[in-house]
Amino acid sequence: MKTKRSLLLQLGFISVIVGVVHADPVPQPNITFTQGSGGTWNADWMGIYGRTYFSQGGTDLVGWEYLPIIEFSDGEKGVGGEVDGTSKFFFRLHYTDTPTTNPELEDFANDGIGSMIKVLMGMNPFTPLAWLDVDADGIHDAIEEFWFGNLTATSGGTGDDADANGIRDFFEIQAGEDPTTDQTGDTAKRSNYQYDSMGRLIAANTVTYAFDIEGNLESATIPAPPEEAPPPPEDPPEEEPPGEDPPPEEPPFPF
Image (cartoon, rainbow, N blue to C red; front, side):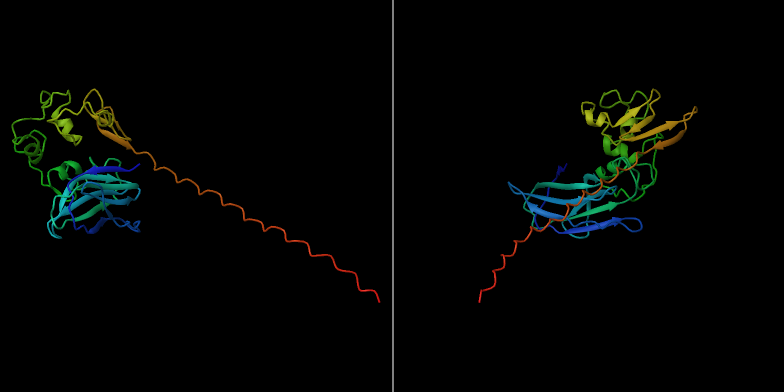
């Protein structure tokens, strides 16, 4: 099923594809651009199984900005939005084949910050961000500044719950959610993450985590990818209709 995300798009599209892939990658199909109704434009592409896609845009080929959209795996993908009158706009995909089951939480830069929060902060999700925690609350100062505008609104403690939804700011930030907005009514998001009585994440989407008696992470179980369906059987070759019988031979002329 195709999921369409909204953002502001402009005329004069070109497509560029930048990949972070492994040996023998599956070629990425090109992006197609189509004009929609009411002055809108759509950018569409076919996803590759296990591939994570980041969308970038800009008014030239130098100042690329990450859009707040992350697409994942195979199937039809796309973004669309209204045209605002700018004469040109460039759009490209930045993708990776790094294995993951939750690309929005995945830490592709290995700096302890999920990819979606980096995209929302206008940062490259593949570039490590040096750790900075002046107030020593276990939350990166850049994330606190982004969500709260200061370093004092939250301390990561049990009593810090800015949106009063019963989930600590610290855990919402870990899950890549907005700690200032109550999202517990979103059943789809609420069912994605499960915590035990100690507040440890024990499941995220389809990944299940196991801990030892001391609380150390022992394993993470990732389901195997679905098997490809066998090709349909070929139809048997059509038989040619039988030809007509030759006419009977006439008896010889009597002499």
